[in-house]
Length: 112
Image (spheres, rainbow, N blue to C red):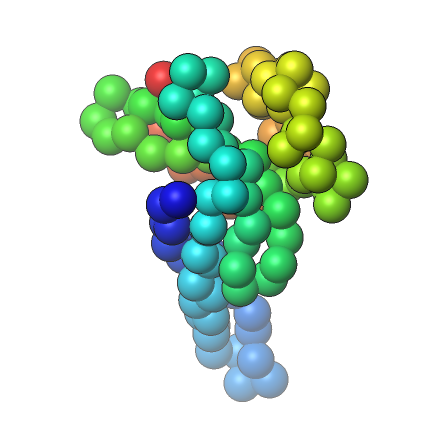
């Protein structure tokens, strides 16, 4: 399975009013991948959070969007392909944007 790494930024003000940016590396480890249905399921190894990801393209580059799953969803989707497909199709329609592990930029892509 593939592993992907992404960076998130957390911005905080310290007591001297200097901006401090902390970078947290996120490492995505796929445990299941469907080439036919174009999605993967896995675990983000830094935090232990579960995710489903879908390929996205914005015309300039191709990337993946990662949606957080509950442990129950993760195990269900590993055993029930239909439920997983229903979830990722809803993600493609932007119905689960509240579950994105990383917020997209201003030039957000569309499902590839």
